[in-house]
Length: 112
Image 1 (spheres, rainbow, N blue to C red):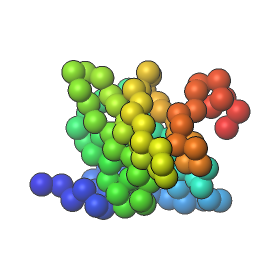
Image 2 (image 1 turned 90 degrees about the vertical axis):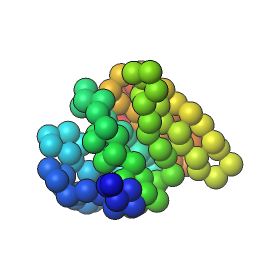
Image 3 (image 1 turned 120 degrees about the vertical axis):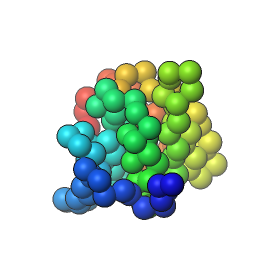
Image 4 (image 1 turned 45 degrees about the horizontal axis):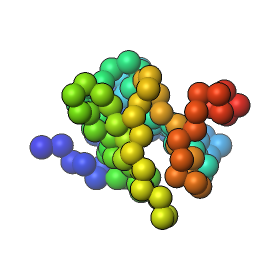
């Protein structure tokens, strides 16, 4: 059973540069975060291991989200402060505002 409190090492790297932490699995930055945002990206691979890396990153860095799959759709449960939200991945990527607990839309994301 995989350790869910620490990011696995197989084909995975973690780096932090100028306040941006990146968790890369194979060739995809599956999690990127700063003090303001969290960006989750499957790279088009909705797999158990991709979701596991995302959830391990959440646990290790105390990011307060949980990614799961139900009937082929990918979901993110995000709880921060008084906010407790469930968001569906519309594409392969989901961006969360760490201050408000809200999802950032693609249009808003273009400015990041």
